[in-house]
Length: 142
Image 1 (tube, rainbow, N blue to C red):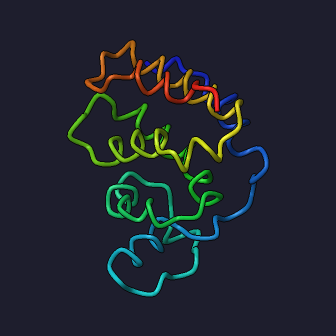
Image 2: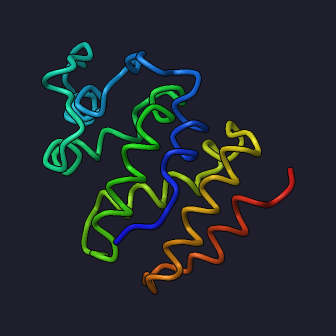
């Protein structure tokens, strides 16, 4: 089934934030997108279910970078599990996020390497995106 090593991936991304909540949830970002006041993070309402991600993914662009990084392992697992369903906005938004200048500039080498390894695994599944180009973007020197 899935042979990607998420244990090490999670160590890179959740190591410093283990047990912490994001400053803003996807639901909060989604509220801002709808011109509403963002609600506080709630562990029950802001669960990590597929339905939650699909409903609130448009809030991703409104999150601060620490909150974005909280969601990276969650979105990576979703994308890896659902892939290659390329009609899925969650996967498309995740791939757009990790190639954005804002994200790349705020990520360390270990984070970029972990994403490159994930995308290399995606390549094996013949995803329609040009994964090699995304990997090159992540590995580019400043």
